[in-house]
Image (cartoon, rainbow, N blue to C red):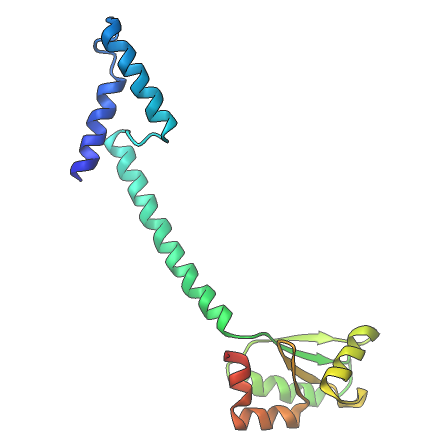
Length: 163
């Protein structure tokens, strides 16, 4: 508070026109004004300094909140459910019901017509085309619905998602 008032008083001293008619006063004031601007205006009115302090506090609060959200998001790995359109719809519903009951967020990815992705999923999950839907946590294949239930019961699913 005291420092803010001192900065405000110094700003007022270098910006008032008092004494500008005399060169020995005008030249140092002009140099001080230029230095103030070059340094990013540390000397300003008391109102401007209070406004900057409030903005700095608000930014710190936003950064603290964003850091907490980032840590929370980084802790959970993405859950991907690969399925083929209109195939094993009941199984897909059961997979999503289990994931939803545990509070996990997931993303559905339809691989119908995308042979490259289909080959990747089948190879990585070591399953057949008829076994879809298949659940992945990040790049780790959990498997079909029975494998997902086993992973959930053993705690492997939670460890894979939460790290």
